[in-house]
Amino acid sequence: MTRSNRSSYWQLLPYLRPHWRAIAQALLCTLVFTACWPILAWLAGEALGFLVQGNVPALARLSGILAGIFLVQKLAQYGQDSQMAKAALAIALDLRKRVYAHLQTLSLSYFETSQTGDLSYRLTEDIDRVGEVVNKIFHDFTPCVLQLVAVFCYMIYLNWQLTLASLVVVPLMGVLISWFGERMLVFSRRSQTLISDLSSQLTETFSGIRLIRAFAAEEYEIERFSHEAEKNRRAKYAAAWLKAVQYPVVGFLYALSVLLLLLLGGWQISQNNLTGEEFGSYVFAVAMLIDPIAHLTDNYNEFKQGEASSDRIFELLALRPAVVEKPGAIASPRHGQSGIPQR
Image 1 (cartoon, rainbow, N blue to C red):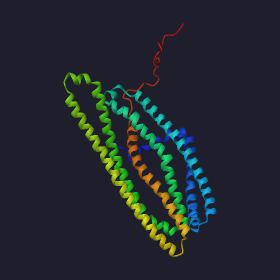
Image 2 (cartoon, helix red, strand yellow):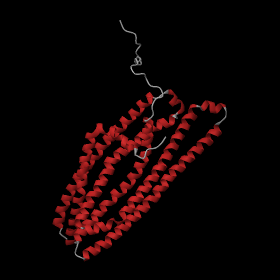
Image 3 (tube, rainbow, N blue to C red):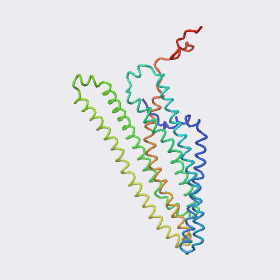
Image 4 (tube, helix red, strand yellow):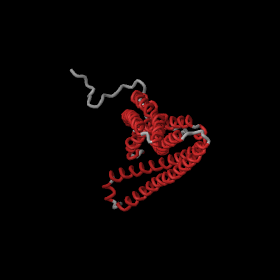
């Protein structure tokens, strides 16, 4: 089957529409959650100034304001996470019911050639993974992107020259993350195919255990299972190795950008373009970028792994029965009905 260049995630849109209210509420909470970050960075810079001055009363008042902002932010985070989890689970349920109902329409010839373990895996693990991706897009990925945008805008407001100079490594990081993500998709597709094959082999073995015993084929089955399990291990190790390489490379680039920031910040202060308090606020803002960048790197990998599951689900939904009912055909009585009129 020819694979389209367009991501299969777009086919999830019809499943999102019935749950738009919960998604909209989650996004509203996300906006409140995101708006708190620049405010916290600014107040942290002010607190640093009071700390250097030894102004304890002002620092105490500011600490109370900071605690209030943190409380609002965490309440918004709760609303975002709870509403999105509710929507994601409902979407996964709708998709699972749709796939199961679609399987009931397929011809018997399809089930004679398909692997039972593979179908079970698609209905359980693959759909669960797609549901997790939907959840992460709204409760993790979107807040991280908005946080990056909001904090970057605040950093440009503080000192645009310093911010532009700090972004030298960002294009390189974006290219690297994209390359790692594409490779992760390849490894994930292979791993999921192999685990489906392994599951199918187990189903086949356990259903035919009497025949295996009758022909004394236990050693052959053990060897066959070991071979499939080893192929699955290699595929999973390839994905784990890629992650092990990715994080140090991206982390090293981020460390270089922090060192560049310190050098340029010192130069800007020496040129009277930035005060000590503003630079302190700027450093707090930069610190607020570490977590979302790490999350986005993680999310991109998970999205690529989930895309392999999404491909497998919609590949199943694209199948058409070999035999279809004739238009206007008379429906047969439902199970439990005899079709005989009652007196």
